[in-house]
Image (cartoon, rainbow, N blue to C red; front, side):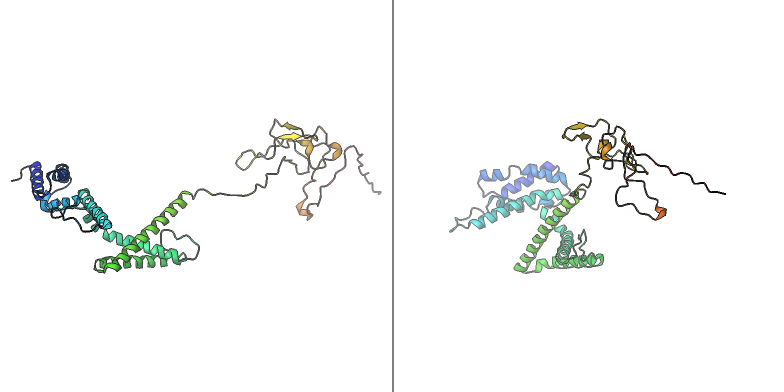
Amino acid sequence: MITTAQDEINLYVFAVRAALGDLPESLRDELLEDLPEHLAEVLAEGEGSLTERLGSPEAYAADLRTTAGFVGGFPDPPTRTDQFKEMRDLALARLRTVDLRLGPLFGAARASEFLVLLRPAWWVLRGYLLAMVLAWLLDDSGQPIGLLPRIGGSEVVALLLLAAGVLASIWFGRRSLRLSEWPRRALYAGSVVLVLVALAGFSEADSSSRDANYSDVNYDNPYGTIEDLFVYDEQGRLIPHARIFDQNGAPLRLGNAYCYDEAGNYTEVETLTYPYCADRDPFRAPSFAASAIPSEGANGPGPVPDSSAGVGPSAGPSVGPSAGSPSVSPSPQVKGR
């Protein structure tokens, strides 16, 4: 009668060792080296006896034989070597061992038994991927498909195509075990292609999502050629030491904060007010280019025309009387009585 978990582990190991009695002792000890620790982990991770979880000791010993490459004792030397077959059998044996070792992690005797439970979820996912690939092939609207298989941007078509793809995938999935060898291989190959296409699409969508906030704008700055700024009042008079702000109260900085003379020598401007170089007023009369007062002698662009008079702006700058010329005031007219 089994009273403790350690007793159950010892009996199971003893039975497995007995089932491997025809193997060399060194090989048998190597196969059973980590078995007690593995059985202890199986008991600690779930309910049920070792026989219920892993099968009979004889079946477990048969799996160990497959791992070691022995089935029913030592085989006779093969008449000819099939290297591909040997590699395949060795890979399958290792996969069966991994399947057996990972099973308790998923609450099953084998990991493959847990994957069988996920088949319906895979059928639905495969139908979704099939619908997305068909939408990608048939859509020529140039619009992004998104997470639904839209064709021409229609959500109704997307839902119909999605439903058709999922139902078709479930129908094939339920009948895949009854298919002959080549149709079943074609179904598996198509599923692999769908997975590869889906991974490429998800990678592209992830890259587009991460780069959505970045926009490479390549344009020419229309203010790149401005060197100075001249501000005039309503009457066309130059306003010296002007400051310009935007709607948020931030000062605007345009042009180059330095002046240069006719010889090409540059002088840095200490105060950031406009204009930087008053003597470069584009409307200043040449005779007053060296005037100390910026607005003195300036021709200016002319006063702002009165819009109510219906007169548009003049084609060129209005030229006022030049400084120093005598001003003539009209004589008052006196009417006789």
